[in-house]
Length: 102
Image (tube, rainbow, N blue to C red; front, side):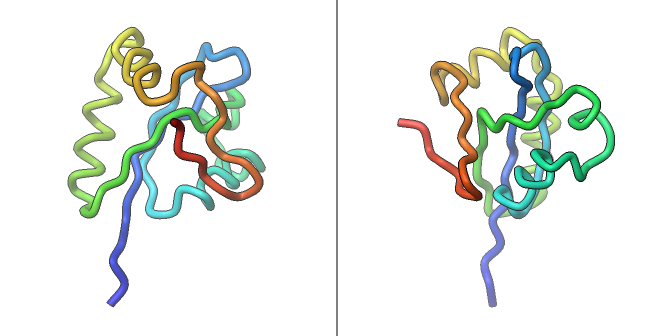
């Protein structure tokens, strides 16, 4: 039996004036889909395809609860969360791989 991992992630655009929070069970695939504009809606409309934050979860219900919590945050609180994880808001998705910030 394969253990499933779930991710809550935040994307932004080039100018960092848009934040999108989502949940997935395959972060690399999902980032690729956002980069290729395969997902219609908010991220495609606002060019939000730069991965700047993510968290891992073992259970989907915990990931969904965290996604909802982050979506409820103010812009300032989301920015502080991102800054603590990824100072400078560097792109974390490169050539099909996810980079963990240091």
